[in-house]
Image (cartoon, helix red, strand yellow):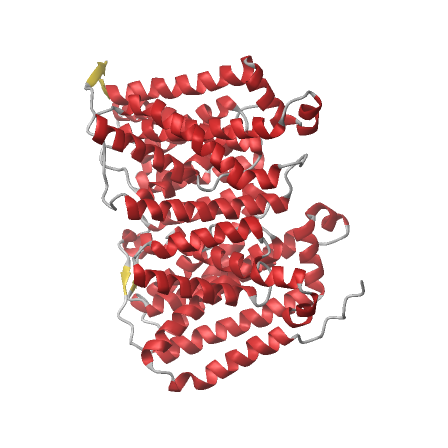
Length: 314
Length: 294
């Protein structure tokens, strides 16, 4: 079977980019309440795209992604409360700190593969939480109370820029020379290495990028809430939600994280309205069913079984 | 520098706690060793074991030592269900488990963890509960040790020793070990791989849930659906410290971890000691990926 040649700029990039542009254009006229819901959705979509960079593209299951989010949140809290910066500076600082932290963690944990990487990543949030609890600079783990101005439009445009950068980068990585190497690592790392793919560098590059964006998104998250508290910031539930999003949408795809974020957010809001707690039960069920029966997720499965959609979903 | 008597007390408590840690990690070790997959929902089953002990105490007045066998029996059934629900599709007809199957089991058991943890929050009350059982103290020199913890420590070592005897001295145990080493050769010997893997998984679950019951002695007011988030990582670190698939590894790993936490907190405080205990995982994985034991 001859596969159609991939278009240079696929319809899904146009679609995503177009809807983002549209959203950005109409944002000033959206009423406050829907805008806040939209900002929350976009924060989770940004986190899902950042996790997609490492877990989706290379297949390394990262349970500890919340660490970078917490680092971003704490950087924002520290720079706003102690250094008296503008929150935008805090978001930038969060991204930078998370980049440094992810380089440090990745340099060690990316040497492990499969379940060993997953376990090492599961342990890092707990270690991070226990370290933050004793840091004097962060008030010995008392948490930081923020009194930010209520400015949903600034939140929106910050997270909007982050998502646009992530979508562009994901597209550039998957459709360029790097993409071949990364797909080779996902299929068979030893074979990829023997063909001259610099696997350690590529993995560390992706891990650092995912940390950078998760830190920025975590900073925006802290900006929209009224403070940073250790047990809430290192809550593994965030990691699990991000993972659920990319599993449901489709790992390693361009559209998947956005679709997953929308589905998980809709499920959360719908079942939260019925009874608090049921939303996680439903999300857990959906993740089990998807992981066992269609492990490629919604986008991956459509692309696999409906060849006509391949052109659109690339 | 803390006082020597304090250090000896911490060491004794660390040893006792380590035995319980060992038995909750032992269940994971068995599943990991036999089926070569990691159950991310492990902590949730420890939590269910602890709640089993709590409800048996509430309804029938059982103490945790009596509840452990009941939990173990329930665990056998749960383990068989888990095997056929989650692992059978990935393990059936395969000679070794690939990265794709590994990812599927990691993600699907993580979904299970989310499901069980939140169901438990919904069904059991979100309050901390505990079992009022305290058989008194025993004095050893200047040490005052709680008898409950002592009994539980002995029971934990006995469970690990029994599982070791079962795996090395009985036909079924040898079949399970053979399966974990070489699946095609096991089939050539006329052993049904599915039933052996299912029995091994069931055994792992029964030890996990019994371990949850024994752990409840250490948690007089600490049984809660979210305890899974602490005891699952503890179990993972213990298994890696001792070496996956090594039966005495759980005991060595559990005692080392508990001693690091209990003695370390005398020097640097509980938070930092916990962080250090978790981070020992990294150098062990880097320099001795096969675990402390040879």
